[in-house]
Length: 396
Length: 90
Ligand SMILES: Cc1cc2nc3c(=O)[nH]c(=O)nc-3n(C[C@H](O)[C@H](O)[C@H](O)COP(=O)(O)OP(=O)(O)OC[C@H]3O[C@@H](n4cnc5c(N)ncnc54)[C@H](O)[C@@H]3O)c2cc1C
Ligand code: FES
Picture 1 (cartoon, chains in turn green, blue):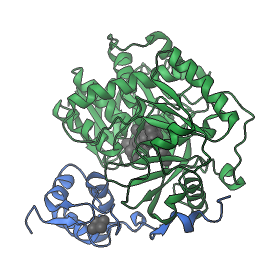
Picture 2 (cartoon, protein in one colour):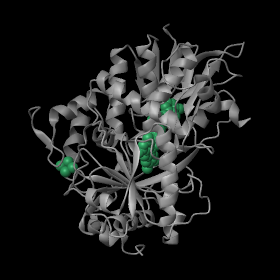
Picture 3 (cartoon, protein in one colour):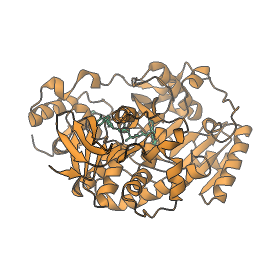
Picture 4 (cartoon, protein in one colour):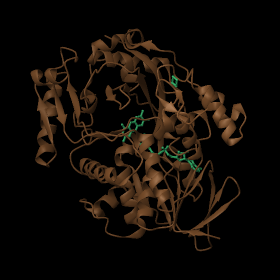
């Protein structure tokens, strides 16, 4: 029977990126996915690759490393996935937001990140269809985007060329340990058993189920988000555009409250505009804990549309053709778990990326390569610090 | 039908691309949609889904229900941002 160096559970963007890096490094790898590739959360998200929504410090550094890895991947992958680097724009609605934004930009530029404040005239010249009362913005040069599902297929395509064995439409039913408590094999729904010494749990919101198989409680919860899809239409905005107000709490003004309808607050709605390569645009998104319910709701859709018109009044006559919902794998400190597990040698977790799984997929893949092979992965991060910060241990 | 025939007119997806997606692992109309964009256009698959479904049945020997489970169907009709957003826009 073939024995694999590693078996990855989950064919979302995270598992696919890990399979790419591990096969590039020469390992013999199998990936098990219960449906088609990219059929979980990766099928219902945006494709933004951002540093702009990260806190100064490690949060930004991690995202920036990943952004740079996207540049490298662009040279290496074969299958097209609409990688664009148009930067992003944050919209500022009030003086209070302006002062927090200024402080934020000052700190980030001091750390070497390319951002700048845009005043009233600049922001309205750049984006002529903006609501008149927007007082300014932040421009972030390096922010990028991909079409997330195509990116995932592209990783798998390359990994397969590197020898990845793909078990799609197969789910992992159990993980079997030997008498010493080490990983021995993985049992699939079809009854097949695959031998391996390493298992990587990249099952996103389902990662806790896989954890249970080896007696672990993994603290990841689904946090639902909904998105509206607009019809193909004239250009509304040139790049990714986000409201800064929603970021305020994150950047330090915990008591800041946006002046919005209570319904929008209730559903955690923040304006995110993303033009797509197909000449239409997406409007996101909401944040709600509703267990594994991933149905869209008309109330959330109304809230998203209201928030969109607030920033771009001329969207009024454009049609919404579809809506979708996805489940972000949420961890309470907003960092993913990318970690070995002390008590279960050979078991790794790479899940819990909440709203950043696309952007953080490359750096996650690299870190897993480091954890498993122990090699120098050549990225500008303090690896010991990163490993500690993202460890499963941090919850105990 | 020849491979260069356009199956999804809204998104300009050919039969050949549909076949490739199925070969790469797609098993349902939704899988094909994710891989090719067929069905993501303005008509939301009204004209192309049935052809994709038939191709799946033929290529993978599936029943129509297997190729397009009921839970996968899109629930929304086009509606403008203005009408949708009117209630909470203040
Ligand atoms: C509305 C919304 C907007 C978002 N926007 C962005 C954005 O702009 N930028 C960004 O970076 N991120 C964004 N995200 C977050 C991003 O989508 C996720 O972080 C990412 O997709 C998670 O990927 P994953 O591979 O961990 O999970 P998934 O894609 O869910 O993959 C896990 C896979 O595991 C499989 N699986 C589960 N159980 C088993 C089993 N027993 N056996 C085998 N397989 C199994 C599932 O089928 C699934 O395919 C957004 C999310 C949402 C909901
Ligand atoms: S023909 Fe395919 S979406 Fe309209």
